[in-house]
Amino acid sequence: MAKARNLTQKIIAQHLVTGKMTPGAEIGLRIDQTLTQDATGTMAYLQFEAIGIPRVRTELSVSYVDHNTLQTGFRNPDDHRYLRTIAEKYGIVFSPAGTGICHQLHLENFAKPGKTLIGSDSHTPTAGGVGSLAMGAGGLSVALSMAGEPYMLPMPKVVRVNLTGQLTGWASAKDVILHLLGLLTVKGGVGKVMEFTGPGVATLTVPERATITNMGAELGATTSIFPSDAQTKKFLSRMGRPEDFVAMAADPKATYDEEVEIDLSKLEPLAAAPHMPDRMVRIKDLAGMKVDQAAIGSCTNSSYTDLKATAQILKDKRIDPSTDLLIAPGSKQVLKLLTAEGLLDPLLDAGARILECACGPCIGIGGSPVSKGVCARTFNRNFEGRSGTQDAQVYLVSPLTAAQAALNGKFTDPATWGEAPKKAELPKRVPSIRQLFVFPPEDGKDVEILRGPNIVALERFAGTPAKMEGKIALKVGDNITTDHIMPAGAAIMALRSNIPAISQHVFEKTDPQFVARIKEMGGGFILGGENYGQGSSREHAALAPRHLGVKAVIVKSLARIHRANLVNFGILPLLLVNKDDYEKLEQGATLTIPAADIKPGKSVDILVAGGAKVAVTNDLTAKELEIIQSGGLLNTVKLS
Ligand code: MIC
Ligand code: SF4
View 1 (cartoon, rainbow, N blue to C red):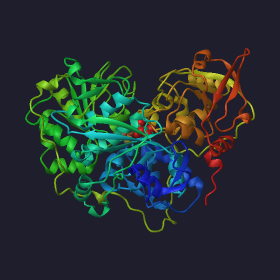
View 2 (cartoon, rainbow, N blue to C red):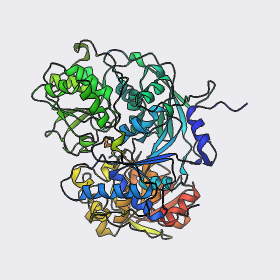
View 3 (cartoon, rainbow, N blue to C red):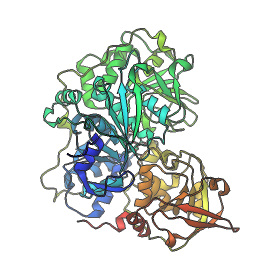
View 4 (tube, rainbow, N blue to C red):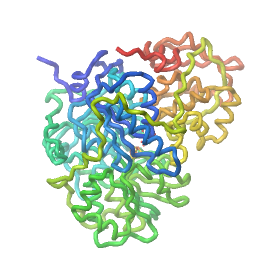
């Protein structure tokens, strides 16, 4: 009899092209679907063009425009036009600006149980809400998946997250994932898939599940996944695509590498306190704190059910005049539903500002709070400065909590909120917005790709020298995010298609002298702590440092997507054998790295000027090492 498998192992087994399913071993997966968004997409498609094939080889590839929708100059609209023409040429579905946020739209329109999905955005696991095995990746990895190449990753461990009971009162799906983050921390999921099982699963609707799998990204997890069951069937048929349903679940006797228990009935409203998504506090304990801004939206909490609950709370009330309330619906479908159901009026009448269906304030594109402003946001990241206001204090909360904060002008004890609204469900008839997607012609041969002056040609990098010499250009601590390395916000993100220009902003908020210093040094190394490169999948956090001459990062541990991006662009990711050596190494120290002696999983000594030695190792495969030595993945691509 076949071995009992959990759901993750089942989908992996069905898509396995190379490797053995032993945790940690490298595997290659056939990818059914890809998605990109504009801020990472332009680079991904420049790379796809460089690969040089006439058509994508996936079942479905979608290009969404949702991040850089602010058009304060030619750059963003030029990027959108480039993306539209590329999509037509290569057989990709195109979702124009304003249609909605990639993950919400993908969930509503395209995600399917049992399929593999790679997206150039770290919150791609949202599609795990319908049982897709959906992972975030760098743009180049997505470009290769579009070219039909297997997606390479270490076989994850599978964690069984056993849900019992059901949510009660004001506790919601957001509080489930906030609770898990408090339990496991922002590095607790690295190398793991969070697979949700147990009797509590059936009590959660697909939008609730998607909130949980979305923010599983903040655990550093490879992905998160729910089974495909009666809830999934209901969701897919309300979305007008019942034929996409297939039931999928773990075998009854499946085993897992680790287990976590959550009793849903014990949860209460929570918040992630500034400036990390795992800094868990109870809303009750924040009671009395003034809230300057409440914001409801982002790919975590912008569904119809989230906004319906918000409308029910705000109905016939007025928000506190000293608090701003920003609402960005996740898609035009959500917006149309709100309109059809008469739910937009309560939001407007209460004083909410309705924003475009896009990422917006989540990534610092508008909606920055006042100086030192306290925010209650339903988003997934509260890294320092990400809101656009450097000293803002962002608390990540559920839509129910955010709506209450807007009404009261402050956090209050949920015990004072009265009766919670009944759990919102999608109506039976959901209006379709399918006609808003641009489906590609059968043959894109004659389509002309239109590029603007901000779209700069790809740079090819040289291979690594036998010996690397240079200085530690920057020493940073634990949990450095890709937002620290390559900041976001409207001004800098408009440069995403222009590496020479965007590289002038590397580490700008952490150390404004960094760029000048590394240029003067003629390149160098970065020293980091645990979980270096967590957060966003932006490959610019590897590409731009590489452009500036960063040759290696030496760290205690690395986040998964950033590690892959470093390899893809030929930067050596080295791990300190003895983590205490971190203290011995200072910014400015001159190092010699014997690059030619580096072998997979073997340690070598770095020489520190003055005579000291520091042992470093790596978790690279022979192939990854070869990629780095060749100056990056694009230099080694040979398509089958
Ligand atoms: C984010 O939430 O940080 C982003 C912006 O969506 C990124 C992608 C990017 O930087 O373009 C992500 O999550 O991968
Ligand atoms: Fe967009 Fe924010 Fe989601 Fe990133 S986390 S995809 S910026 S809504």
